[in-house]
Length: 167
Image (cartoon, one colour):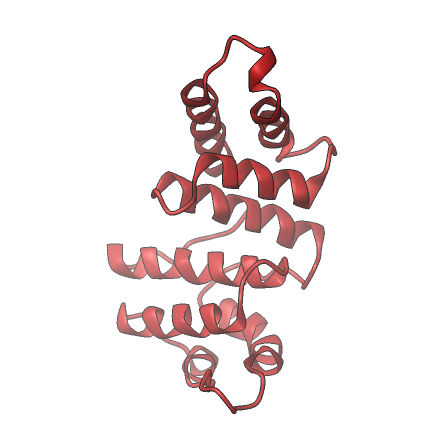
């Protein structure tokens, strides 16, 4: 399980955002630029570490070297400095962590319920596991015309499932 750094509220939020950006990048769903931005926000929130500072300084400007190379090189150590779990690129643990990150985004209103279920279905198919309820609900969205459920009913079920996944 991912561990948040016990700091100020803003530091804790920044650590969670960095962990989420890292998980999404590791799962192939996020950008290296988002990881660098989250590293910068972590520094602003009062978190610190030598490698975190180096990660935050990675250039994301057009024409610069692809930041993905430097993120890949620095991320594990930067996260370790903050006590945050690192997930190897394209691993099952990265996918699971990315799913939780997407659930948090949904619960903050940054991701529509159907988007969350669609990505969960795309990532995990019909595999048993943490995404199972979400991909099942994606199938429900696709068959609303033959059920008594409304979109609002399914949306509420998605939000409830997301809450359970991040608790």
